Each structure stands twice: as structure tokens, then as C-alpha cells.
Length: 207
Image: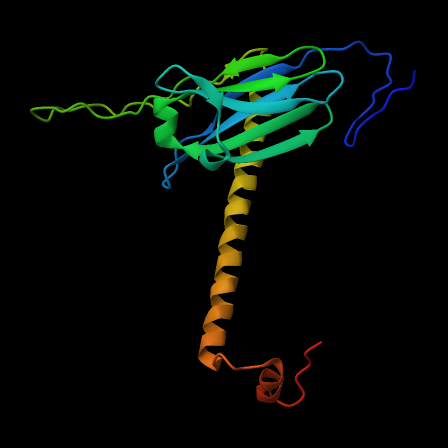
């Protein structure tokens, strides 16, 4: 009997045994000024290297559900032997919900829980007292399989740069659209392409 493969099916023929992925989850950055925080999930060293990563959360009612698309901005990067998923969420939701990363693989599924973040607030004091500045320690990643610190730092840098690039592109598209609307308003609603051509200086190349 033959086998029928649907669209998007990938067939691996290899002598290597199936190997489960090693999963690492951690916070890729501290909350920024826009009230957002970034969570990262890394699956690596698996065979075959095809996985599906999804994000879930446990709300205040202790119900585990998929994180809605409207509550996150998700970016995914696939390379040989590893897949990285990053979500940008509201920092207030990271305080009230507990997030986890779910990785589906041919060799078996794995779930990794993200430690719940706690808002830091200074306790009220009745009188000022001399204090020494506290040392700020970076948040330690929750490494389920002993991922290297150097690799985690590289992921933080690459994914943070990617997220900021997406934000800048959105801003440029918004500014371009606003400029076009302002030009059309100044020229008048009945302005046509021919009118715009007649207003151009002689010798202007419109190609």
C-alpha cells in the first residue's frame, strides 16, 4: 500500500535514531518602557529537527489555555538542529498568569514552565535611612538540559534586534501612509496623476 503525503509534509530518511529535543525557557529581556516583556523558548539537539512550538498560560482560575493571538507578538527562527520561539506580551499579564512552552516532536512532547514574574515595589518607610545600592543580578534562565550561557546571550541579542526591527518597520509604514494622506489633502481631492505630472518641474524623470 502506498503512502499519501499532504501539502507541507517533510519525509526524513536517515540512519540516525530519533532523539528528543532539549528545551530551554527564560525571559529574554526585562520589561521595557512600553510595558512589554519578552519570553523565549529554545528547542535544540533533536533528530529529526522538525518541531512545533506553542505557548500556553495558566490563569488565575488555574485553567491552562493557549495564549490568544491578540495577547502576543510571536517570532520564530528555524536553523539546522534548533528552533527558537519568542513572544512579546504585556508585563502585567506576566505577573497574573504563569506561562509555559509546549514542544511537539516525533520522539515525544515536552513542556517547560516559565517562572512566574513578581512585580518589584519598594516597601513604604517611615523615615529615611542610609542604604547601600543593591546589586542587580540578571535573571537566571531555567535550563532543563544545561544550555550554554554563551548561546543564550546570542539568542537574546538576535531576537531582541529582530523585535526592534519589526517595530521600526511598522513605524516607517505608518509615517509613509500619513505623509501620502497629508499630500493628497494639500493638493485637493480632485487631483489626478496628470495634474501631478503638470506640476512637476521640467525635465523631471518619473520612471
